[in-house]
Image (cartoon, rainbow, N blue to C red; front, side, top):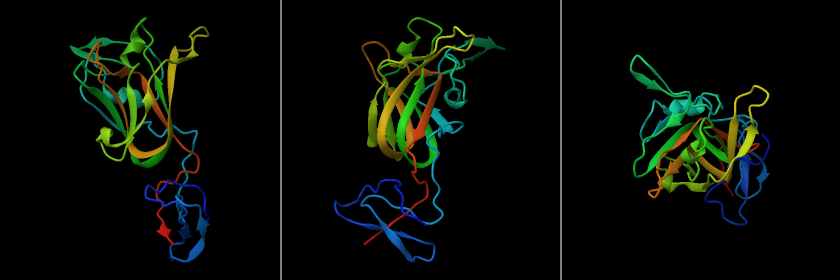
Length: 219
């Protein structure tokens, strides 16, 4: 085993040291305060979207915008609303317009989150308004308010303008500063306009060399 930066220890004391241990609990080496790793711990690929295909939920569903549509790998901004046999379908997630609306993904394990990429709807002039103003949280539990606030969805970058035949992609990138948690949530509660949360894809990227199953011993 070797000591490399892993998930930050929330209770790390300034100046404290931690040891990396093998399965036999033998001393290997010391790590910097607040970091740890054990033999067999796995690293997370920083280029991989760790939210893809994961379990999701949302506060409500409207216009056929199921929560799963935001983790299906399709960044296309076209909502593609349609009705089939009386059932509404949409290619993006879409909540109702209640007092507070949210969308949440369960990453399956605690990870240190580097960035969240949110891909907006693009098929109408004001479609981005369905997600602009949302706030992104990283939390240990489904109670997003108990977690860390990454920031607000403000503005977006045109990743693809569709001129070469590719789908329109408008992306907002939110920095999470390595906040550790298992759940990532987009929340909106703008009573003055609307609190609908609607977007076409949400991707989550973990920090390099963050471990998923490490533990530590203080010395």
